[in-house]
Length: 495
Ligand code: MV4
Image 1: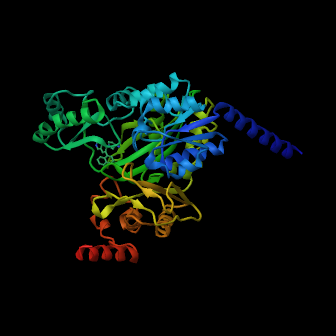
Image 2: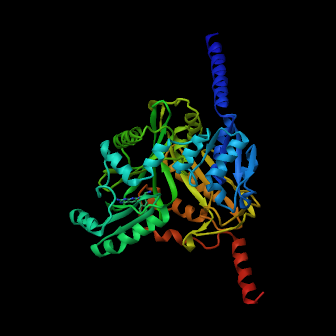
Image 3: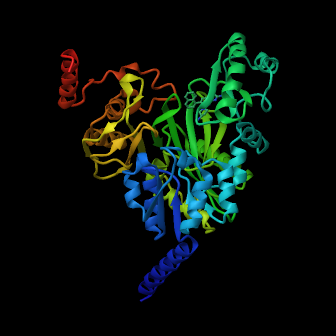
């Protein structure tokens, strides 16, 4: 009898909670596109919250446009609409959307946009403008980390304005050093220099580039950590002062800061180091009263020492690997925290189970310097089975345009062990069929068969130190060869 009463009470509480959520947000405007728009729409549907998508003319065939309850054309052109704060907030107000989810990229780290949302009484689903602003300055983020006792890379005190100051720093620490744009991020505005001459050559260029790219020419210098692991901790906060971490992701397999493969958990963190780095991540988040989802980035050097480098005040592409090993829905928690609800999980509820790997299925040709590829998908079949997740927005007949990033889909697998996860990813990539344009699938398949990767022996130098990865067969399928030969014959015959 008691068990039955308990079940009835649980069902009642679920209804109340969902109703409360529904009463919190009636409609969310998804201010993004592609796979992350799909991801947000899915979370909203599970919370019974209506969704409004925005799209450009170049994107009108996007599957997320079809899946949203409403969709609105923004512009002009393929990108400007997604970056037009006023147009988006005015639309939200006009259609009765009481919240906006920015996804990642576009306006997701734009404090002015978050401010405009607030001023227009539309909830910005993300951290406070204070957190966005502070973490948008790598110099301020470093100062904050140092002030709360979290290790940072030895570097200059604040931004530097003269080569003289730069040389004074390198005289003390030696080379190599990294020149970083304070307003940069995600790998943009970074230069490694290994001598006084290189420093003098690059300082002014770095400042000019930073001014042109970010509207802020401030640069600072850090000691360059050779061949680090790039480890980031997922943070979840709410508006009641609760902050937890959901473990780490190892994002070391990148090419020029473009992440290709992410894994969770890291294969090299000991439980003690995970505990220490997790505590450091929460310390930094607490110092800015962090109240939504965010990621604290560290470098781990070859001696096992870690250093804070930056915090990303937004949802990340690679959040899926964390979700797969914790069974915690990060986007759902973002929405609930932004709606003012307290976190429903505490740190002790976060259990990391198994291993997850995410591969980015990009419309790029790794054998041609990752040149972005466009074209129409002539055949599409995604993998499935136990522990396989696809976050994507591609289907047969979809045309990939040159206006957006090359991400077609994210393939995430989970296994009880690392070996199981690798074999599952290998099998899933074999199964994944996208025809009509080149993708990173064959390149990723090669990595899944590479001994160092399988053994977990990789750091940020992996792609540079394994050139054989690029020598997979040029034509993945016979029809690719036929297409290429037909094109060659046609060109020869001057057709
Ligand atoms: C570094 C570093 C080595 N030493 N800083 C900065 C942006 C972040 N997303 C990665 N960043 C790095 N900062 C110091 N002092 C190495 C990285 C880094 C990286 C740098 C160049 C090329 C690829 C990289 C991949 C991960 C981390």
